[in-house]
Length: 280
Image 1 (cartoon, rainbow, N blue to C red):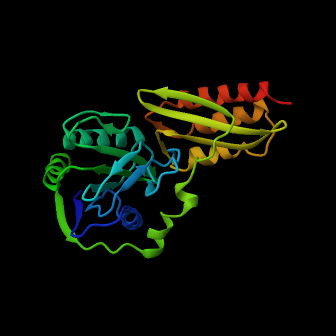
Image 2 (image 1 turned 90 degrees about the vertical axis):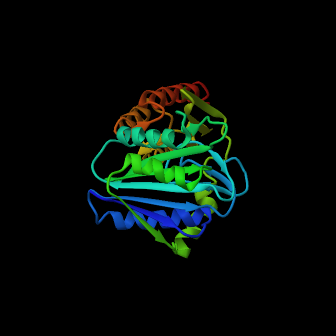
């Protein structure tokens, strides 16, 4: 199947790139087996953080729809999304993202980041239905990126466009409710690491009830919102082993990359034990 490479002629702000990417995902649902690639210069600077990454009270922060690490970017960095409509595992998507990232930078990624001195790169991945989503932010030049895409995709059809992202969608990516996730500090924490990736569970008690709980970290998951929705179920309920067992069963059904499912299950058990010990 052909791959459509859309190269934007003008730079976009990061949130505008996200909005146009959202539009492409919507269109791709009608195109089984097809791949869309969107590539644009960024005309602003800031920090790009993964979907589960803890907000650090930093101005010009943009949260991605994919998981993964933080990267600081500057004007004329590149934003690239690779969208494919086919049935595949998140593990397969991760392998493709790492391969393309290595081709661009010349080095293996570590915890979703390039360790190259000259080429800064971060990638995020997820799946929305049957559509796999790879987001890459990199300071490399356009020609190197295009060469890597030609090496990784057959029948690459290049098209110059003037992207016109929807204003409402662009502004939605600037909402505090979207960007500021995880900025609160709670008393009880449980951290688990795996080769630079990590997950942290944090909770606040009110008597023997869980008043607040959240999951943050550097990892990848599909469906993208499922880790957040799964852990939020515990808010407002008593600290009870049965409820925590149910949450663990739910997480076992989520595709996880970067960290392992066992990392999350270990953190859930550890957090439960800490909460039990502090029930009044």
